[in-house]
Image (cartoon, rainbow, N blue to C red; front, side):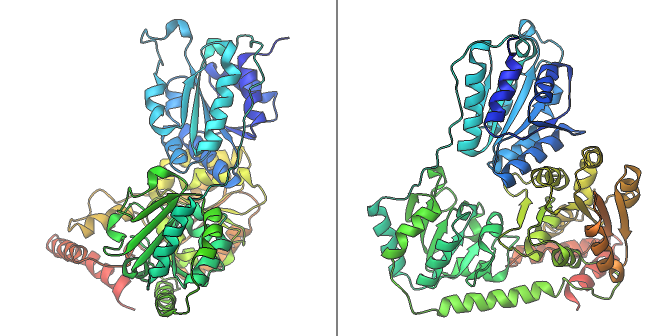
Length: 571
């Protein structure tokens, strides 16, 4: 019996390494789901397609393999779009099979007819429709290769009537995964070395492009006596076993990272596309090396921009740069980092044993989590706490929404990461606002037996939005959340659930929650007034917060101001 087009599509994606397909069945997907049933790919049934997009992106990035989503026509495939925007901006190799209405009805405003191409062109590296059986395998192979080699989402649009047609006898198109090594030319390398050798206070700012380059990066820092600041996306690849580490800069960063980047006279940007221009130095000579030439100089002017993968480039650069003996700037920055971390950790404590600081919750999770744990965190304050208060070990992974900046990513990303690595501990640091946006997919953890651990930072507010309003000098508005008892919600759907309202009880509950063998949720009432303090406080932020305080007092909310001051400025 001849294979169907749907079977050819799934067979080709399986050959490209796909293990799982996330989605919700639908009538226009029937031949796809049937093909998956008879393949080695496992279907993962989510309750909302957006969760499937988040999960597929997380699985793809932590496992470094192709992962699939499949959506029914119209709304089904549209629901994926925010989760897939996140995946695409993380360069996760994901393929979406977007089923389409029958071809005879296209262009007639038929029910559930959606033109996917202009929508998904904005968040994909490939988006094409399979038009005939004769190029089903070719289009599918092209989609998989684009997702894997360019890094991002590829979309295959498949009309339902075509999916069940007999496949044509096509040539055996397959997916190729070249692994080239690239570096700048000798002329460029010599110019880069010349600038570094002329520098007096040299700093390295390392981005996620430094994945796999830890050894050469440490060797360069030692040779030129340079502190290493890193972006939040580079935490897992740069922070561990690093005596030159000075932390992050930017709003999520700390004083030492900010100081190293802004006070150097020579800055080496390695695989770094940090977007906030105000955190770059104003007078330093800047060298940027990136695998993507479109990144060069797009955030801040640079003196030299060169293309290369970081490990290969540093290996070629090391013999060209002089060994420096002077280490005053390095020692100064490292000492500032030590003090900055000590200052941060002052808040990651029990306190008076009553109100629970979110930093303390995060520090306890870090303390008791496995050395190869995978952390996910919702956009907002949980993202800041995981970046500041968990340790990189060289085996841990941290997933947060930095480039896309979405809410509600943590729990579904944890589902994907746990599906990729069932034996590893996967912990979601969920905001109360983020979790409630995607709460239906708690059931996915039960139905699919995905043993994630969910910590809910339950401060009864959209805390980061509230902070942004206060810094602008505005009274916080519409940020309050009337939350359920999340532990009871968890228990109602078959998940281990506990609620903690006292800091004195927290450590024992964290240990029990992490030790539970199945999916588990810990609902922790955290301090609403705990502030995310940036590494450098600008005058406008001080004035804005002062203006908020005056407005709050005049509006009869002086108690909020007292709580904010007491919680953040009184030891």
